[in-house]
Amino acid sequence: FFFQAEDGIRDIGVTGVQTCALPIYLELTAQLRGTQGEIFRATQFLPIASALGLLPTLDRCVIDAALRSMSEQNHLPERVSLNIALQSMLDTDFRQHLMQLLDAHRASAKRLTVELNAYAACREPQQTLRFAQELAQFGTGFALDHVDLDHQTLALVHELRPNYLKLAPTLTREVADREDTRFILDSLLNVLRPLNIPVIALGVEEAALMAMLRSRDFSGYQGYIGGHPEPIETDQATR
Figure 1 (cartoon, one colour):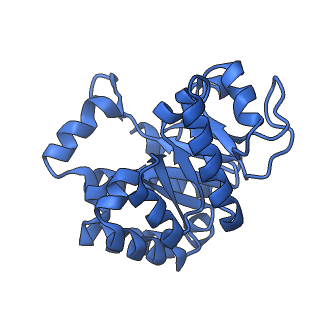
Figure 2 (cartoon, helix red, strand yellow):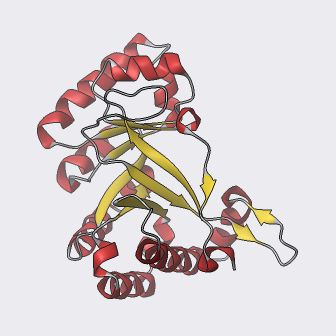
């Protein structure tokens, strides 16, 4: 496992977050270790796994290991997030297995938020709504990742009420350069404020962009400015 923090953006200093409205999440990602010890990043193996229909199996292994790590490692933050594939969400066996895992790890399940790509969620809105309801039975959160500003996504957000949204990195980068993007994002933030849905900016790498985000109503950020992904060494994760 590797992790990268999703930090609150309020009162951020040089060394990190002092206070924030949004709880600090830790996003867990997985990499594969080969028989010779070589590391394979997700960008290398996910396309192959997708083509072979293996994403549900892969996501099952990741979530199983994540829940075990959350139970065994007291230094992990209260809130942990991880991303699953649309292929997994649509797989009946995966859904059943996931609900069994959450039932078996109820304390950890309440600390977990499952993220789904917003474009994928819009392709299957009714399945997404049912999936979020299933997670909620165990206190597990649901969030949308890589959110764009299309009408279909915004309509789903109103019905789904996710725990938070992660803004697509392309839009985050445009905040510093394009007045029209800033206007649209400000409108989005105004719409989401009464719904209490935090917005996290993805791909934040520069101090100037951080300052601009802070001057608006973003709740958090994720990116290299907050640190590169770091390994979590556990027996389960390194096998």
